Image 1 (cartoon, helix red, strand yellow):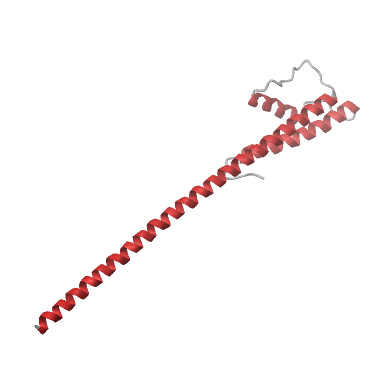
Image 2 (cartoon, rainbow, N blue to C red):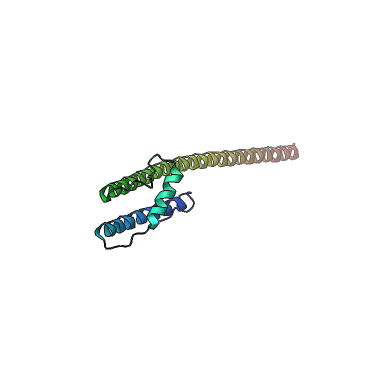
Length: 147
């Protein structure tokens, strides 16, 4: 699934496509080694080339060097494991960021609540002060009428 709003949507789709391409490539390689499949560059080969270029890794495959099926499978499995590990690490980072954001929002909410409570308390004090002053004036007026 994609993570909309978290900045991971495209990356996770790319990761899923890479995983599917790796699996398809492994299947194609098995067919080629058994003589039952076509010998052409698979989508995974293209994706793998792009992935290597993107990451700038030193694991670039020399075009002239032929790897055995077992070596290619091991390489693909290693890349898939690295991809899964990276996704787990990214999820941990995102979870931590979500937790920090939740804490920040909670603190802001508490601060706003305190401000509103202080404002309400001040309104009540001002109201009581005005009421007390009105009562004092009314009492003074009655005292002046009696006197």
